Each structure stands twice: as structure tokens, then as C-alpha cells.
Image 1: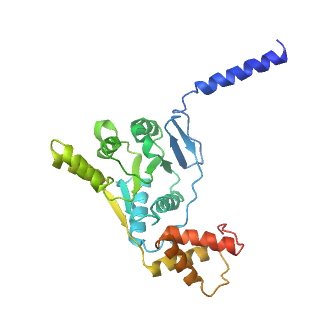
Image 2: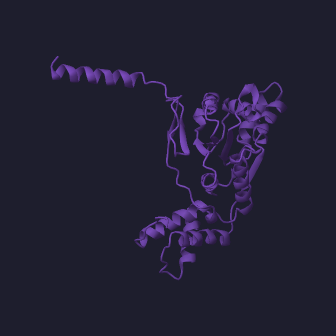
Image 3: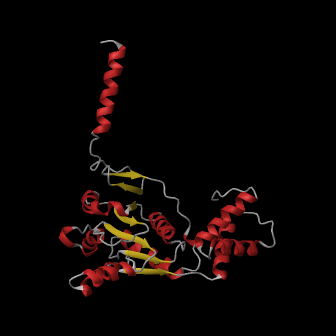
Length: 286
């Protein structure tokens, strides 16, 4: 067999393997990794790098920060802990706080892992939970960012079963965290529309509201005042060691927030990035 034929056959074999990839569901998780992304279409957990900020940078959310870190600590130690819903204002740092709390607790409890899961993959939760049961020495926070449901979306029913522990779906080494801009995960107008067409309208509304009630810990995030916003900006400046060469930096930060449509942790971070670029400074953590 000549070299051209060998190369041709090799390329055919690679193409066939891509068309029918082996299942990676049972692949062992790599040691030393504690952040993963559930890729439902490939049935695999992919290690990822999760850039987490120090908890000390989160200003104006002291109670939310304390309770989330405490709950994560309990879970990492094998104690009773709650599923958590973080809800409220856009850009208030909900998802960043989840990553920061995990990193903080995982620094002391190496068995604690964070698994990102998209809303589109919620239907595969039973499959994922079955996989994670095979890792009894590890504990997993399953994290769905920006969770919300549209009318007719039955994904919330699958999630409700998981939160209730129905049909044997509970896994002692798994916990579910979610962030949402909505307290009840469904727009009010959607609930009212479904109520108008349901045979028993009160049950439809109750069903949608009850999903958020199944999170044992619900943490609300609200718009911040200017002092808190400027405190966040100052915390970023100190954390990254940025040199401030403008006596009016607070005025610049306040103007930036107004132009962005409101004060938030996200606006503070965007201002810091803008300031660092304008002053030719690096945002590398010390």
C-alpha cells in the first residue's frame, strides 16, 4: 500500500470518527480542575477557566455575599445546603458573585466544583446528575446563568422536578444555583396570558410562581446608590493598582454611569476597563 493510499484511508477514518464520536459521558474528570461546562449536545463535561474576582471587591451586597458563601461552605463540608436563586437588577454582579463564592470556598475545600449549564441543556439534567453520582468524592454546584422561561416552555417543569427531588433525581453531591433578572422566572404578562387560556387559571399562575419558591435560598439584588457605585470603582482601582492621575475621577465615573443608563457593578467594571485603556495601564491582578 503506497503512502497516498494510506493517507487517504487515514482521512476517511478521521471523518468517520467525527461523524460518530464516541460518548464522553463516562470519561473521568481531570484531576486539578474544578470548573466545567456541560456540553449537552456532546454529552461531556469540558474543563474551563473561570476568572473569579475576590469576594472583597463586591460592595453593597454584604448580606447576599455572606449568605451565598456560607451556603457554599456548608455544601462543600457535606452539610445541609440550599439550592440558590440570585435575582434582581441587571449588572449587579450576580453571576460574578457565584464564581467568586465558589473560588473562595474551593480554596479551602478542593472537592467543590462549579459546572456551568445553559438553559437549553436543562432537559439533560437527569443525564448529568447520573454522571456526577459517579464522582462521590466531589461536590458540584450546577450553575445556570440568566435563567428565565417563555410561555409554553416546559423546561421549568423539568427543573422543578430536580429541585423537588422527584423521580429519584436528587444527587447528594449536587446543588443548583441560578441567576435571573426576574423574581419568579416568568414574565408577568406571560403568566396572565396562560391564566386566560387555562382550564384552572389559578393553578397555572401558582405553578409558575412556585418554581422560584423551590429554591431554599433566594437572594435579591437591587439598584445601587452613587456612594456604593463609587466604592466599587475605588475597590477596582485599588485591586488592580491603577494609578489615578485625575482629581475628578469620581465625576468621570458618575458621568460614565449616567451615559450607560444607570449605576451598577457592571457599569463600574466597564468604566475601569475604559479608564485603564485611556491611561495605558494593565488590568492584570496582582
